[in-house]
Length: 505
Image 1 (cartoon, rainbow, N blue to C red):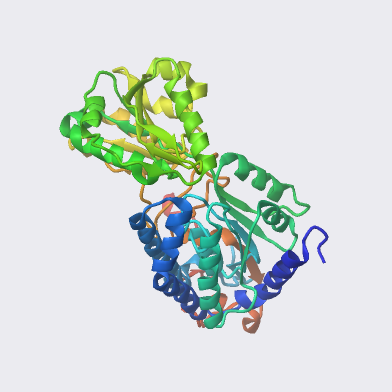
Image 2 (cartoon, helix red, strand yellow):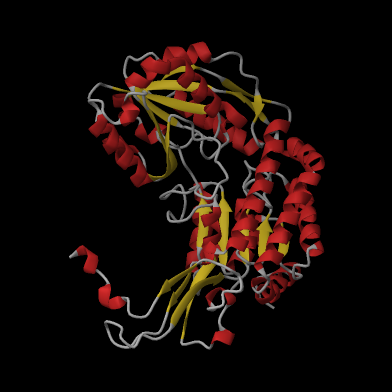
């Protein structure tokens, strides 16, 4: 028995480790059917699950219902990805006696499952980034046994979701031990430290994420850890875009900031706008009565209240929409959106107080003087972010206006520091689609080459293995010449090496 684990945790980790070889060996179609069965079961249980989630999180029925649908869609997307097999990145270099560097052996490379993985659930997405959310879906799709650490903000929902998933996986014939749910931070840390666990995933705060990432890195045998931590998602809005559609931009901005009480990792925390422009007034005009929205839990509400007060109290900050927060008898905070404006000079002077994330319905308009080098503002104020957004006029979108060079430089600066660059839209709402990138440089994530949404998310939980001169009968099916799985194979035929680079002479 592993010394640091309780008997209950030892049984869970032992079962996951025992299930790993059999689960990795399941046929893609078999695993795909199991994942689709989980998706179907979640949608069938939607009324019960949404009712629990509303009570535990304060999020609306419409938001939660849509989140269940999103979760099911992502599971089904991964099922199709499994059967397609492109994610395996199968490569075959045939033996070549005439290789440019001497005789080349037969070498074949493919991605294989890591083994048991622990996923730490998020508070703000009780379905999409929780028990059966994107990280869990990609872990199972990769063929790795999954241990989920439930979030303390929705424990009853976590248990109910886990029951639905476990029953669907068992009914689909998946090996015993491929899925477990645990509760408690200490339990999660203990499992993360166990040598049988091969990777970790997390969505949450920078502080906790850094703690867990350091634990994963400091193990005697370090393991990969994929954390999504913090992001302020800056927006840049040109003067011509405001002149063209100020009311539309103002409405979209307010909707994006206030949705789900601003408790979204992609909420636009800052918007850089021209000094003296019409957008603040347009935002005020668009600000009809916003109903109060409950924040997820008292701890988050208290933190938001403190953060809001710090922003409002910073020199040079003025309220465009003051908003507010009240606390009920249970300590829950009920908020309406707060939008403030500040000059670029005061933003620079108050950087320590202003630049960090406000987890709640608050956003800052930074008013920039004419001639400001917008591309230089990204590295000046921010490290990594999940998203960066640019709002342009129709003419500017053609790339032929006088400021085209400045806009190209800004796009390049955004691409250097974010995972997703948006144009004339809003960062909230992450499309579940194969090409999606939901990640970014630190502190947005702990690994800026990975994504937690989209089909590339699966490869986080795989590792490459090459087979040299292997007998055909002992090769993984994805690497066999007969290709029984029908997966895409990248093939380097004999004789090609003598021509490498010749086309560029």
